[in-house]
Amino acid sequence: MNKAISNTDTRLNDFDSLVTLIRAAAELNQYIGTCFEEICLQYMIHENNNGELPFVFTRSGRWWGNNPKTKSQEEIDLVVSSSLNQASQIPAKNLPANRETSA
Image (tube, rainbow, N blue to C red):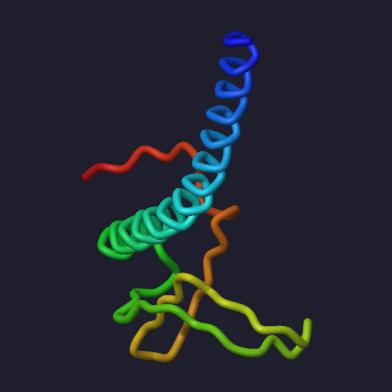
């Protein structure tokens, strides 16, 4: 009888651990997203300072609003613009994966 109680306790602990892991994963995803956005901004600043972009940006920020093509709300995590009102959105999939940069 003690063995049955022990197995039940183990299953409950496993379930509690799983619930905790799922909650932590959701929070981790949000945290990693914020970290990734900061890394992208630092990369853009580095490239901007080295003249590697098609224009020199003077402002950076976020954008959200209606996309008339998809008729839905969208958010762009990083937008840069120059004093000439040029703007560029760089999707994460277009960033080079393995690029050597000097700090």
